[in-house]
Length: 156
Ligand SMILES: CC(C)(COP(=O)(O)OP(=O)(O)OC[C@H]1O[C@@H](n2cnc3c(N)ncnc32)[C@H](O)[C@@H]1OP(=O)(O)O)[C@@H](O)C(=O)NCCC(=O)NCCS
Image (cartoon, rainbow, N blue to C red; front, side, top):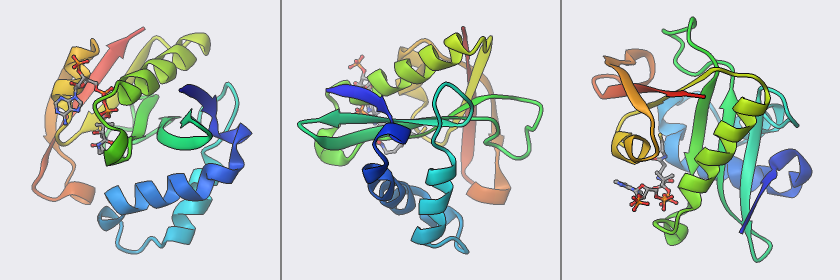
């Protein structure tokens, strides 16, 4: 398995967009798959923010993760963020997610970022194991309604 810049594998942009749309599309009811393809396309970059990584195994895409400037709109003072960590269910629990998170941390480090943020409604345990700590629990009502989310940070 290798982790590459999605910018170098543009043939996987649609796959990534479909994954993210299926997982989180319900949060933005006005967004279409095509809108998501455009958003993923805009989020590709090399050694810059935003950037997206793709995990590849046997020439197949098996996961993705992004480094973005802003994520929770109610916390504009916090930046940058790890976002869009996704591994298709058939490839889970083999360390791909953890490897992708590590790659985004490494990218942030090489860009001189001192502190990285993420928010999650339910995967806090995973990130605690990877060395992240809880900043606060909050409601991101604009997107998640009454679901509580956890904001976490990683000191680089
Ligand atoms: C969350 C997700 C990316 C994890 O991917 P993965 O490839 O299965 O993760 P890994 O195999 O690298 O697991 C990393 C660690 O977290 C643990 N873990 C993975 N999924 C977990 C879960 N759902 N609950 C608790 N722990 C979990 C693993 O046991 C592992 O810890 P260990 O090495 O100490 O055993 C994947 O389940 C996914 O895409 N889920 C849907 C989208 C999502 O929720 N993304 C995260 C949004 S913040």
